[in-house]
Image (cartoon, rainbow, N blue to C red; front, side, top):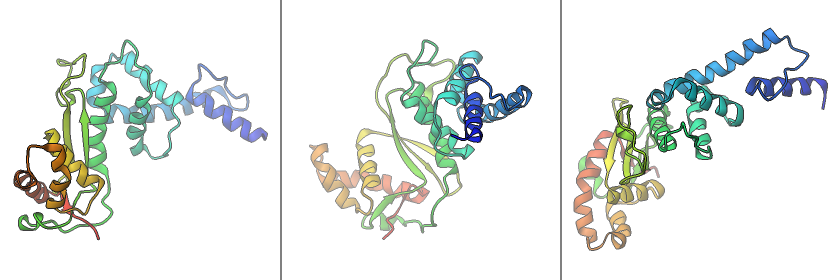
Length: 248
């Protein structure tokens, strides 16, 4: 390893965790502190803004400790600041909760990230909307500006005044960006979640094909009953941009 590479590695290690790694001799301590504050404060500020509810639930020192732990120990895979929130959610998947962390930490972080993700994602190509009478027979797809999520905690209600300590009834959501670029959260029952998840995983199916596939798991409802129940919902979601024609 060359002297330059050794210095760069020592610099990076110190920037991440100055309590664990010594400062490189080749760089003045005053300059190291400037770089350390610049890097960490940029990441810290983005996490503060991306997770306002979560941030507000923590004592200041505990939130700072969590941010420092992420900064020091997680190897981010993207250099873009906009991806930091996604990397933080990924980091929390394997993060061992401490006494200061709420049990819903991972789920609430994902719920807050979902809004940022859907709100900032760039569409690859414009897609003409489906008319209501096209929904019944057209090959369908979930918009690329939409995602599905399910949580064990009622994340949509969590606040300083409501912090559940154990899981409850499953909370299912469709999160999408409408034609006015507003992020919309739609609460789903489990049957609707199954329908939209099937569409997400296997786009290009018609409503009839979807209901035929799902009917065995939703007995005693017949495919015709499922289709009659699902059509108004899919028409409404198509009008708002969450359901789109499948790309051939």
